[in-house]
Length: 182
Image 1 (spheres, rainbow, N blue to C red):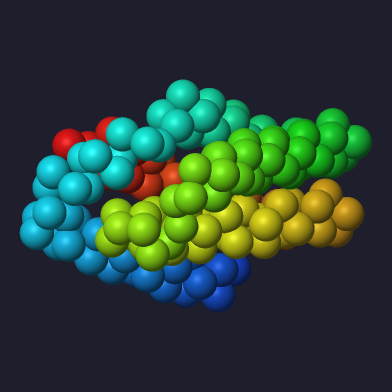
Image 2 (tube, rainbow, N blue to C red):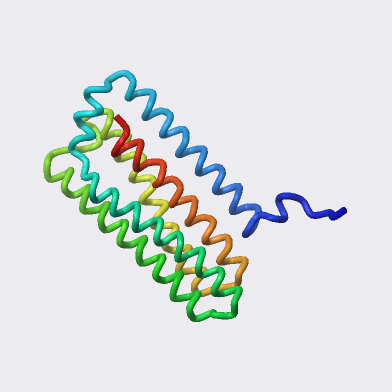
């Protein structure tokens, strides 16, 4: 019998998992609140949702999932003693995070140009709150990916990739709930 616990099997450090779980709980609470308020005005939420750019959000989904695959691949490369390739994969993952932010920024600019702000309708309050909070996590994740590309020990890459996968997961939940669910 071994003294290893399940916590010892987690990639990265325990504290990154405390952070990830706490962030998932915050986003989960935000999505639950969004869905609860949506029940009170389904037609208003549907009408507001129709003004969103679903294609851009779909592209952003592909961008983030691809970025997550690159982060995971970077760890495999680093473990296989391909340090330079691992660093390039992490930098590419971070650059895709920047692409995500550019697309999201263009979407925000289009909403603003049409006079749609956070106070236009409760849908947009949640839209800006949830996607803006997620965008802040993308910024943090890009910085983390660049940091672990520089300090590229496998354990660092594990922790950075785990955080980035949390960012991916949150978007994979936000995208259908905010952009598609009727």
